Amino acid sequence: MTTSSFLTVDFPCDEALQMAKQKLSQTGLRALQTFDLHTARLAQPECACPNHGTEDCNCQMVILMVYGESAEPVTLILHGNDGKTWFSIADDPYQTSDAKLAAEIKQVLEKAPISQAG
Image (cartoon, rainbow, N blue to C red; front, side, top):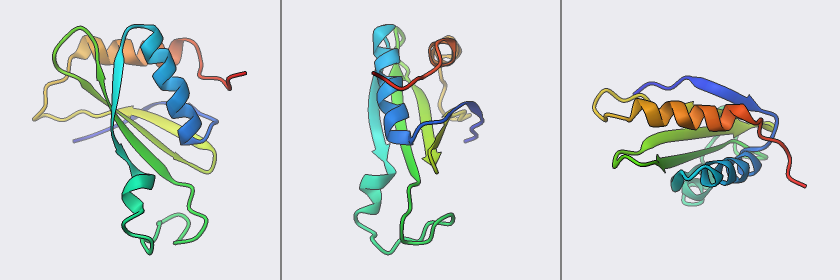
């Protein structure tokens, strides 16, 4: 599986996630969260972060399965640390993703920049 970032925003991952979910939903796309690094790390409190060690780690990774009209979802990955978040779409040769849906997701998230609510 390969990924390449298509969008970077100056928001922590948790904020970028909420804004992205809202934008996707407004365009009729459904996002199902399947992984959250913070939750996974709860079972491993001594897990050392390569960027921050074990203390004050603000790294986060969230994986969303985004569904459109087709039955096959697209895997959207958000990776954040130090107040920035990178958006990527997983490209797995063993899992066929709808190229049209992937393009739509990118367009939705890039078109109107994710900005702070309020």
